[in-house]
Each structure stands twice: as structure tokens, then as C-alpha cells.
Length: 323
Image (cartoon, rainbow, N blue to C red; front, side, top):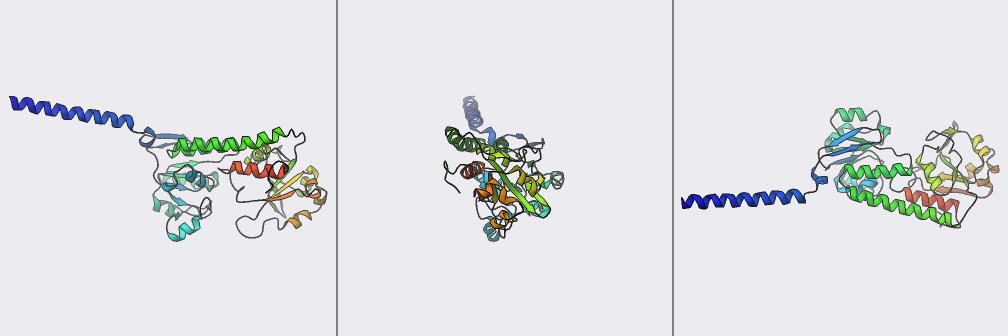
């Protein structure tokens, strides 16, 4: 009888210790790391993740820097051949340290399958491939911000999807502070006449493309204290003509550097100045044509505050260091 009593007490003690352990383990666990995550992407599609993704593929070069900045870069297993920031990923591909999963708009299903991702980030440029990827069972999240506020939302979305919400919030707060600093400096100068701006996206014999009201570049120009000459165009990137630009007579002309390597699409600055009628444009007459870094302005992402600073420096060289 005594032996049975001792055995019963021992069992109760073991159970008590187990219950206490389970209680504290449950209390101390991070639900963000172990629980289900539900997100809604920029296309309004709901994605349910059973747990924090451990294997990430980015088909969006705008997303990749965000992943590394918020601290989940070690989970990235596949990138496009166009990813070049924040690291030289080409060298990583060649060394076998990262898998190349195709081009920006031409993802390779075989390459994606080889890395078995828990989540795939993409943009609507892969519209044709997205249904196929989802049919194959992949969790696909589509992002496509068209404003600075949209970029903030995208960063927070990526943070939530990858279990890095706190880091994403911190990044957004930092960008807001940086942009507010630019706006405050311009406001303090009490400038009454804001310069009008022409930002060239593309130029060839068929026409000219610029940034309209629905583009994040329009928002960047506005936050930098400028007036986009195509802010009345509802399209994201409206096609126009050289004659229309001459008529709108911008105070400042912004040209991107060459995309990647090679000659810029517009040829040279001298060729731009020599376009028919352009000598009459204020931005040309007053030597306010600026060539800005295409790599910096190639995507709506975590470098948006740097974009605002760069444009502000072109518009107000008396207030900022000119690029």
C-alpha cells in the first residue's frame, strides 16, 4: 500500500511539472513565429500561410532589398537575374550561393520548383504566370505600389508575411522621418513658386513616355516640392509627344542614366537638348537638365526616401546637395 502511495505521488509530481512546462512554453512562444498568417495582397487576393515562411522566392527586384533590410534575407532561396541590390547577386549565382529563377517577367517554373519555396513575392508583370504558380500550390503574393503610401503598405505587408512586422514598421518609420525632413526644409524656405518637372521614362521615334498621376514617381516629385507636368494624366505611364513637352515647358528636366549597361535610350544629353523645339524649354535654357541614377529610380521600394532627396536636390540646389 505504501509503495502504491509513493508511486501515485511520483506520477502526480511528474504531471505537475509537465503541466507547468507546457503552460510556460505556450506563454513564451511567439504566435507570429508558430501561428497561421493571413494576408491580402495588392490584387485583393487572400493568402493563408500555415507558418512563417522559411524559404522565400522574390520575382520582384523591388521586394528583394526590403527582405534583406527587415532581416529575413537568410531565408531567400531564389531571385531573378535582374536583382542587383543590396548585393551583387550575379556573383552569388555563379558561386552557387543563390538560385536564379529566371528573368523579371519570365520566371522558370523548373527553377522555382527546385528551391521549393514557402512563399513567392511578385508583381503584376508576371500576371500570366501567377495563376499557374498558384495551381501548382505555391503561395503567391503580388505587390504593386503606385504611391509612397502604397510603398509603406507593401513593406508592412512583406513584414507580416515573413514574420518580421516589427522590423518592417521600423523601416517605414525611418522612411517617413527622412521624407518629412525634406518636406520641412522646403516648407521652412517659404518658396512660393514650385518648379514644374518633366521626368522621362522612355523616348524613341514613336513617342515619349513619362510619369502620370497614378505612378509613384509623381508622388516622389510632389513630396520633393515639384509639380509634375503630367500630374493631370490618370495613367501610370502616359505616352505623349515631344511637342506636348515643349508646350508644357517644364522648369526642370530629369533623365535617368542608362538602364544597366550601355547607351541611355535618349542617346546623350546633347541629343536631348537638340530635339526639335527643346531649346525653348525653360529647363534647357536655364541649364536645369539633370541626369539621375536609373538604378535608384528603377523601382518603388525601400529607397523611396533617397529618391525624394535626389529630386529635391535637383529642384532646390540652394537647399540640398545637388546630385
